[in-house]
Every structure is written in structure tokens, then in C-alpha cells.
Image (cartoon, rainbow, N blue to C red; front, side):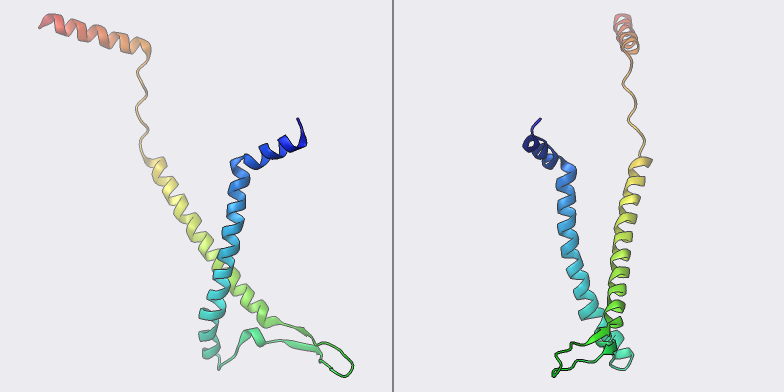
Length: 137
């Protein structure tokens, strides 16, 4: 089997396509969550904490110096706090989706299974019974 044919077979499988779609949707979802945290959740938290903007919070290790062309070196813990909040929001959303899917699966499992089709012998016996009933009438 040629490598090109193997690759086409690999790509055409549903799992690969599903995974690609999931990654693309996940990236878009990540942008939505980032906007939710940065634009909706963090401003009220900053307001409640006296106008603190977590994105600007940092510990400066080396100050910027234009003369010596030294860039600022800092630990940006505010961005880390924002990222943690984003992670928890994504985790909560995924938990809610998985919980909803699991509850749907449980409902499907609770439905009674369709009765099994009668065996050949049972079908023949039922036909004989019906014939005998029709002859008695």
C-alpha cells in the first residue's frame, strides 16, 4: 500500500475529521471565553477590588532602560490569574456539556429494549395456531 493511499485512508476516517472539527471549535470557544473573562467578568471584579486591573499586575525584576536598551523583565501574575479564571470557566462549561450528554445517555439506556423477534419455530407455531383458529370459525 502506498504512503499516499494510506494517508488518504487515514484522513478520510471519521475520527480524524471529528478531531479536526473539535480542535477548530475549541479554538473558537477559547476566544469566546477569553473575551468573556477579559471584557465581562474581570471588570466587575476589578471594580469590587477598587479599580484593580489584574492584567496589569506584575512584579518587575528588571526595569526597562531605553539608554542601555534593556527591556523590562517582569512576572505577570495578573495574566496568570486571568488565565486561571478562563480555565475554570472552560472546565465548568465542559462539565455541563458532559453532564448533559451523560444524562441523555442514561435516558436512552432506561428505555426498554424492543422485544426480540420470534424464532422460526415460534413463527411457524403462530401460523399453525392462526390456521387452526380460522378452521374452527
